[in-house]
Every structure is written in C-alpha cells, then in structure tokens.
Image (cartoon, rainbow, N blue to C red; front, side, top):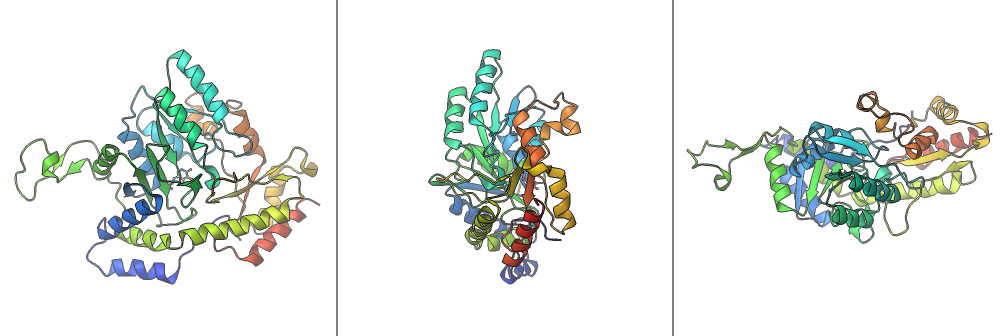
Length: 385
Ligand SMILES: *Cc1c(COP(=O)(O)O)cnc(C)c1O
C-alpha cells in the first residue's frame, strides 16, 4: 500500500537520537532547548516552547490567553478535531466559521459576516483559531485586521504548515497572530514521533505556557510567592500539566529541520506533477496563492459536479483497491457525535460539507518515488474511464 503520508528518517536522524540515548538526559534537557532555538530562528520569532504534541500546544495556547467558561472560541470546521477540542478543554463554547470553496481555509468573507452578527448580539469570540489547511496559509493580514477591530486573540494552527511562508513572513513568525502551533506527528512535514511547539512574540504568553507545560511549577525564586526554603524548593503557582517533550524527540526534530526546506521543495515537485498529469480530469486541484509558499502537507483533489458519473466513494474505493492509501481530510468537526451532542447539525456549514462529500487526499510525502507517483497518476486516470 502506498500511504497518503509517511515520515522521512535518515541515518543522520538516527545518529542524532542515538547520541541522546548515550547521554545523561532523556527527558526535557539541552536537546529540547536546541530544537526550540533552531525553530525560533527559522521562523524569526523570539519564543518557542516544545511540547509532547500539537494538541497540548493548542491547550497551552488557549490557557495562556485565559480562555475559560463563558468565553467563545471559533475555528474552521474543516480540520482535525484537536483544533476545536482545545477550546472545550478550557470549558469555552466552540463555534465554527465556514470555509472558502477554493482554498478550503476559513473564509474571510464568512468571518466578517459572522463577526458583524456576533457584535450585534453582544458576543464576539475571545479567540479565533485559523487552520492553514494542507499547508496553505490563511489570509492572515485580513484576520489580523479583524482581530484588532473586534478585539480577539488569534492562535494559528499551523500543524500542516511547518516550512510554509505567508507573503514575506515565515509561518510561525506570529506577525499576524498571538501564538502559532506546530505539529511534528509522523504524517506532518517534519517529525519527532509525537511532538508540537508553540511560538509567540509575547514574553508574557510564553512564560505562562512555560509554567503550564510542567505542572504550573517554578524553581525561579523571583517568581515565587514567598522566600525559597532551600535548593530543593519549588512552588506550584497554577494548575499545569506534564506536556514536556523528551530530548530523544527533540534531537530527531532538530536533525529533521536541516532537511525541512528540501522536504517542502520535494512536495512542490510532486504536486506540480499531479497538477500537470491530472489537469484534464473532472477534478478540482488544490489552489495555491502565488504570493505564499504552501508546505503542501496534503494534496486534495475534489470531484467536480457530475465527475463523469463517478462519486467520491467509488473513486476512493477504486484507489484503495489498487493499493493506494488515499484518505479524506476532514470529516467536518461539527458533524462528529460529540459536537452534535452540543447542538451542531448537518447543513450548519454547507461549504465545508459539500467539500467533504467530494474530497480525496492523494499520497504526498517527500519519500514518494517518481515511480510510485506515476502508479498513483495512472490509477486515478483509470478511475475515470
Ligand atoms: C495533526 C493535527 C493536530 C494535532 O497534532 P498532534 O501533534 O497529533 O497533537 C492539530 N491540528 C491539526 C490541523 C492537525 O492536522
């Protein structure tokens, strides 16, 4: 089976992990700090906090901005459930903004309409979590402008977009947001096995997330409520978690970072070939804005109306039967039973639901060979006789 995504681990990566295993530190230590510094420098942002996964980073980000019961959080319905769940972890109410039918990212037009309505009803969101779907950056300048006008925080879920660029900024620079979250799950652009990171320009938000990453405990005497009682002494100042990343994971991440730009370049090479070879089929191919650099986490095709009498499930099954691990991203979050139990229902976000009914993710990862891609192309063509 050719999977839709796969990690790319080199001998150098294995060597880097082996060195940590032979060292004195296994849990969070010097390799975590090195990985954080490398990513902060790459993104051009002062503060980076590595954690055990992106879900934890989203949770810390929501806690850091003070999201709580009675507050409102908005995100895209076309995402992995974690983008929405972080709001629920904090006891906040979650709502969604429907997507743009071309980019599959949160629609700015719809966001404006919904904010206008929310203001009239007297309940604007405390935080908006745009998701850079498939690695294609959202319209961050517009989103930032709206956040200033309506007074909400912005947390970018850049789980798909490590290595992407929005206009003349690196995704992760937080030029247009308060916090950006990255994922290093093996199907994403670079991996640490499990892992995530929160990036910010705001020292206060960083220190809050730093505290909450490790139980809410500080060993910094200047932050304690009273005098230190000795070298063993620490204080728990808030209710935190154990969201630490290990040095084993961080060494893998820092080693992978050296090939990050090459990974993204290879994904573009593969995507251009799909663009060329599938352009005449009844499919809509992914849109990429010329001023941005997508990280191309996913290559999603959508069947056009009619599509030569084929429907998505037929094409999907044909490809799976041909040994191609196609996938569908995403089942709209609001249609998950958990979110339905909160009152959401079909037709709430029609553009997302229409997209979902027609979407198929084709294999795309840096280690996909030209021969395997050719087999995928021929199999897709055969699915439309
Ligand atoms: C993968 C993913 C996450 C969660 O990442 P983990 O590191 O697995 O916790 C969150 N949001 C989006 C959009 C993702 O794709």
